[in-house]
Length: 289
Length: 289
Image (cartoon, rainbow over all chains, first blue to last red):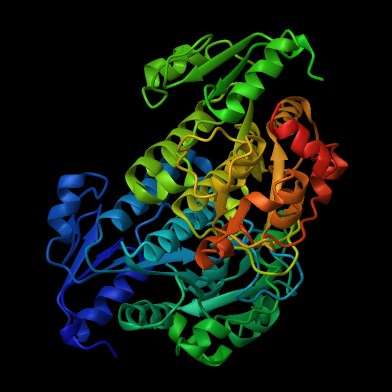
């Protein structure tokens, strides 16, 4: 999809679930990639991006940055100062210093606990967690820097990405991924939402494609909500063949926040060629490669 | 209006136009007031609030802070780094450290260049200047800190406050105040908007009352758009008795940004008892005390 002539690309949060998918895809496409993470790993440039000297060095001579590094929702809610430092201050520093194209992974968390009305490109954001508040503040900053001509940037709002690894991810929405792993392994699982819960989902493959497509997309608004498949928990469980293995013990607050996503329309992203996984069977197949 | 038992109140930007009106009103009501400004002056505690030691000292033992200090729109647009430091970073530091009630002077600049549709409490903000972007980011931060129970805060969106002193204020909307001074002095003036231009205005007296009322208001949302009188430039010129003294040389961009304010409704603020000046005659009388 992306061509090698787009130049050297930096990916932050490269050891994370989405980061690994993005880096793998970029390298597969022959694109020189600086994979940056605070944790060392294979093919990873390890360091603290909050350190401006490391930041300058790591991003030198890159043509684009895909900024995924973030403190996830649950962890951000538990540690405001950490979210402020990583989800806001680091993001602002990267945007203010960026020399090339800047792709920012925002989140549907900017919408907060969704109301029943359909969400579209005009729905006002109303974050309900520190994570979503800092994502929204970063979106506003990005749009302004773009308007000023100081940043060639775009923010993509990511839906629930599945299936994240099982280990504690700091995400309050971990059940969305855990259900894939448990049922694929033939295990029983207790879900904190009802079968009627609805979620917006995207596979790691689809989100990696979207993030890479954003490097070269033109004439796009500063902020785009990515298309996502709206999935009901009951139909997901059925598609995973796990009807007999699941107990539903809904937590009302959690279901209101993560399991009550209304119909979504994303005309701006659709027009630019961004796509979700298409159907549930494809999502399920891609979610557990 | 406010009673002395609300405790010691800090006012930032106290030497500014709105700050002077707020401090005068507080002291007149017998309320102990710490009037803080970066510039020394009568009754002013002068210092740099970006210096955390000064900030702690200046705000010690205060029960509320009315945060007015800001780099105005034109100056913020010309110096992004300065706006980042004062309009965003300082505001965030004050909110994160606040011990008591926190009243934040936001701005209708969060709406950007307004579209013709009426604006109400549900209109999504869409800032068109760095000033408005940093005000909006601060509103989002305030709402989140309030939700977390870390801040007893409220943001009031201020309309055009008249009549500011003539000297260069760094405000792109200076013409709104200049017209008062020129016509009161019997001078001719050239206006950069047409007689059809519409603006939202509030006198310094009315905005001081609103800011002080916000110290004790209860059960309010985190962000309120203040009521304002919607004034047409032609009717304002007539009310000022200056029909023969005015030349209109509209600047289309400036009129789109500052002279095309649609009808405004502010039910949330109205319900809580916030009021604009009532009518044009009262606004004019109060604007040039």
